[in-house]
Image (tube, rainbow, N blue to C red; front, side, top):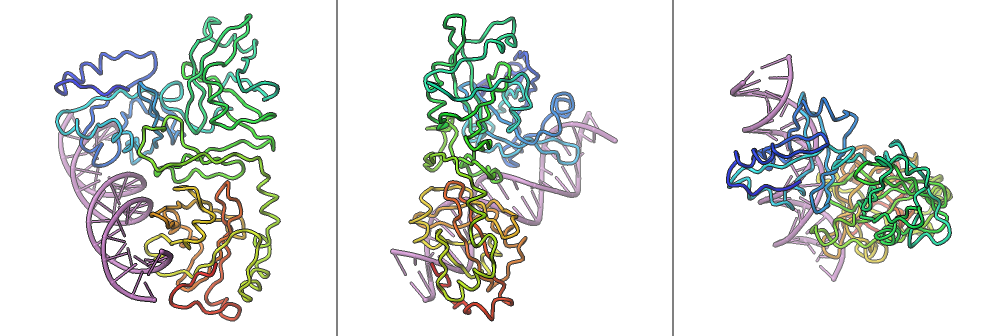
Length: 409
DNA sequence: GTTGGCGGTAATAGTACCGC
DNA sequence: GCGGTACTATTACCGCCAAC
């Protein structure tokens, strides 16, 4: 996608229309609404012809290979590309729009610039590789897979895609065998690939390969990019908070260091936790004010502002000690297993539950005065077990919360 | 120093309207 | 009737300030 620096709309349109791609494409003249309204209307014709309506996510890629995750939504009869303000800002579309219309080329995704996530396995053809031996320097492409390259011609430069981003990689021929070489090492490093893990490579045409990573525990790894506009991507199982490699140095994001991946069995770990199964026990523990789960926790009395404003401050000691990672999404889980993704927002040294907390309060019918215990079950996944004590139910078994400083840590 | 409250702003989601 | 644009309500985020 190339921002066009022509002197007027017509010239820009002319140049955009002259753009030839072997992939489906459309031309969009950026309108102020696209900036003010924060979305881009997609031509219905293009949507009808090329976009499966099941698609709700897309990736925009520009010529220097930076990528942006956006949403595809349908409103009434119109289709929109949403959550694209980061793309607008970082490609400086706003200023140019004010002076003269811009034209961007949007190229359709599944095969090129936009790619649905989490569907690598469905893409054919594909192959798998188990990480054994000396895999960290290079990885061989199965010879039988080479027939899937156009005319048997293997591209020398390719890309490896995960839901966390993409990595350029060179394909080198050695003794009639083809290997991922230059760039592979970085892919291994950035994704913290370990011996005996398992990769599924799905062919994505000229884009390269979509890669699904399966840990030693047999579960697929999910990635969570710690960005402001990706609120609903915390999964369960193997989750890594990671910034896309394409974001390095490009985006004005808070520093987020990759968390080392550990193949833990989350389910067994959490299911053994007393809070997960024994509400009565926790009530008793709380009554004695000697709550000791063996895992970090804090207690809080729900206040009006938590429900109205949709955020809740966390005890600073808890944040300092246990939440060293900045700006992440946490998962709040209640005893029946239901979960809510909630933004963990940092304001200087303190942190608070932000986006999604209102929903959590609403769904759990939290009222002012209700007590909640948040137990940090899994530091890797930022998974909290939330145990709720209703004000009405708990009056006999919990001490009445004071007006101030109601957290007991 | 910590915490909660509040106001301002940006972004998102949804609907209404207009022109072809 | 359809597609695109304009408008609006809601939500999320940020930062300041006062109370404790």
